[in-house]
Length: 161
Image (cartoon, rainbow, N blue to C red; front, top):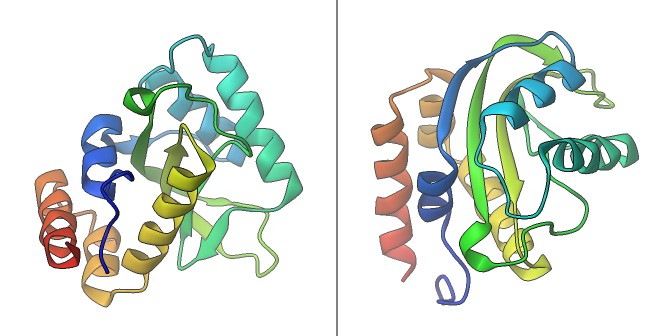
């Protein structure tokens, strides 16, 4: 079937949100605080509100999906317009305990900001798909260049349409 036109693909969301490297912090809170300070702002949503929403979501259940990857996000969409949504890929300087049941530490984040539950679920699904692909996982673990990561995603998305 392929990606529905109404939902934005991961490449487009990452292009808007950015890929960041060497994010400081040794705790979940420190990392998220450092990241929220540098990522794109959401219109009408102060950075401290975004941080609080993400920390509240993490308190409910860890967003660690294993293999050193977590998907922090607010529980409810905070962006009010499609144009304000994005996804950030962040590589952490240190592996961080992400409150997971298996104790697996995290060194890579996909930080998701969506305008709708439908887009949010679509983005989660797409990230989970990619993280199960060995080629993509290797790009993340090797911290490959941003354009190589985006090109891999773009090429894969072309085959879905």
